[in-house]
Length: 397
Image 1 (cartoon, rainbow, N blue to C red):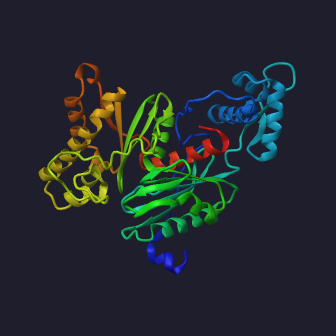
Image 2 (cartoon, rainbow, N blue to C red):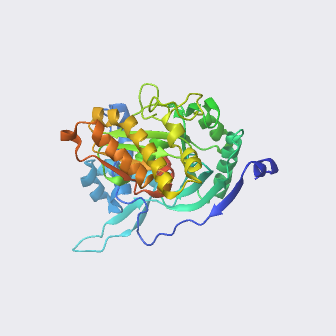
Image 3 (tube, rainbow, N blue to C red):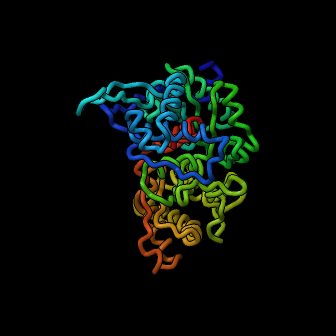
């Protein structure tokens, strides 16, 4: 980094987790459901995405296998395979072991290491995290800018981190995915992010100018819920992301919910209780985020004895349950997934959230409601950001 960038935050490289053989770091995968019919003029793009998605999920197969799996004709498959090999997205990986007379089939697969994805997670309370990933989600390198306490130049820190990641990539870059706190529209403009002091900030354009690759920007909870849905197994998902701020992401019947103002799931500035409460970054008092953000909980529990600490976390969980009960009831959800610091969330807070939900919604219908921690780990936003790029650039989800 340049000297000014170094003054804003120190960037360090963390070792990437190792994987072995054909192990898939994403785990089991599911595609998001499409919401519209395919028009004739879009058929080729749809067929191309269908072929890539089939290989992504199922692994290497022959052209004949692809034809059977996708329902496309062998002529169409042959044409698309030739095009995608020329574009560098699929490769021939050998021949299938012969099991009878005739020429063995040539197997093809997604070229999982031939391109890279850049991902940024801006959600943590004390650091920004970036990673370079292969197409199948293996982290090649990771960079962390920690001790980010003074955010008057958050944009400069983020752009510097993006440039470092792009410089580290040893393969062509498919694109960059970004999960950020705040309300983000479809054009990648952060409409509001009080913790960063952003209003109508075009983060997508700023990053595109800095690294010259396609960029997709989404709210961090919306990015995280894509990873939870794709790899977590639930059909309907409400994920609450707790970090620098508080937000939630929704996938209902296999489709992400955005809302008319790109703010679906924006629960951080819902007032919880009539007892006043701490001042929020938005200027009001008693917002859920002021009670529940990771910095707020850390500060309030720092010097508390164990009993008082549990009481503080239980109180925060009750307030989260108050905010979520109408959502769970209205959408008929069966579980709530929490993502954030497990030392804060996994215990009295989660228990109080569950108890409050059960006391505020119709028990006969929701007696089995669950509140659980995500199993996707602390890289959930990075993984969701990678899914966004795969979906946006290749039609793979």
